[in-house]
Length: 85
Image (cartoon, rainbow, N blue to C red; front, top):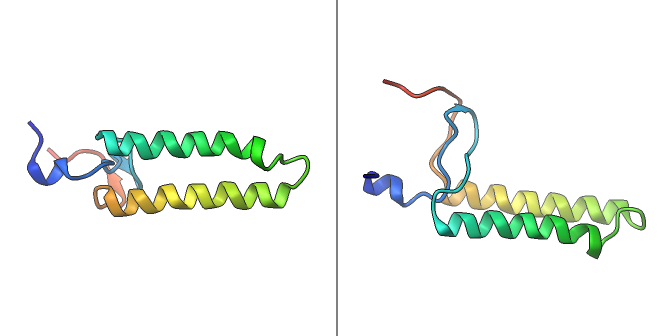
């Protein structure tokens, strides 16, 4: 069974490296899948062939929002070299 403090995180810290892994709660999955849907919609809303700069800005904003949610609702992260025994 998960530790109560662990259960409050939507995204676990990665085992190796820096950052977060795949979501572990329904809220995390909702955020993650919403970001994926918004990434996909970007190609239709702002076709890169017509306005590459706006398309890139849109995608960077979505990625930044996803990182922001991970930062706020994810497990605190630092550089990791694997699980400690």
